[in-house]
Picture (cartoon, rainbow, N blue to C red):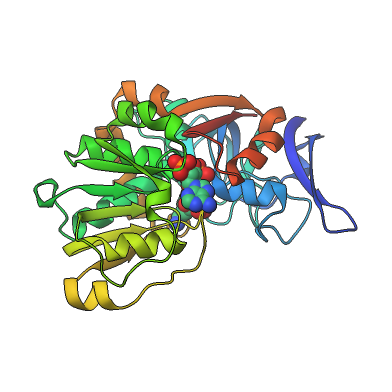
Length: 326
Ligand code: NDP
């Protein structure tokens, strides 16, 4: 028997979360079974667990879009019993039972080996959010953004993706300006490497097609008016890696930044990201994040705390990364 958080839907369509005891025959199809050591709380988990977003269509569902653990059974030649593995994305925790459980069964194709340099705890301190932050940084670099070209901006900086992006960009030598709606996180963001704190209110509201050119690059986790304002403030040839919608999925912008300043808007997705690109991102995360970083941006919570934390993350009240110990 093992313990899991399970989501149900009542007759009125409300999503309910409860901790249940399950055994292996309850597990979904897959060729690798994993004893989960940690999952983590991501914005999408918050949407799923609170029923705020239409993330889950088939109930009951075990949430948790990522996990790290040890293989306990495998029909996939690439993975043997005892191997440590990481899973992020692929619809796990959305369409396929996820990581907020002591045991998970998935397809071997969805796994990556835990890099030797990382402990399971460090891997989930990174998790989906950290992987996405790394993919954003790599997208900016591939677009030619370099530290000597000027400052870079990170929106939603206190969140999971934002806090890791601040850390990684600072480590790569960029002057990082961190946008936050929570002034009380300023010292913490500076401890992660932020050079300057920008109040979220400065970027809210309608923007002009072109504003003063400031940023060589940006990582945007929020979308909406803020992304539109960021685009209007991009310097010539600048690039924005857009990965999130914590404020809105709308983008009320014009073509002006693109056609007059050559600004590039780079979409970043971690869910279906191909295996080779994932491996490269994980390897770079191992190289760039020293041991001192993990404790700075992560905390650990238990399965019982998840429903409350899920409410908090969709209200933008969670700071950094939260690991979930099932
Ligand atoms: P978090 O909730 O941890 O972070 C989001 C942050 O955005 C908050 O901490 C807050 O930061 C800010 N924020 C919240 N609400 C608003 C608002 N209404 N207006 C402006 N800013 C707001 O979420 P994650 O870091 O896990 O995810 C961030 C986004 O990235 C989500 O939309 C998520 O779905 C997306 N995402 C996309 C992935 C992909 O593959 N494309 C993968 C992972 C995440 P502060 O208080 O500092 O302002």
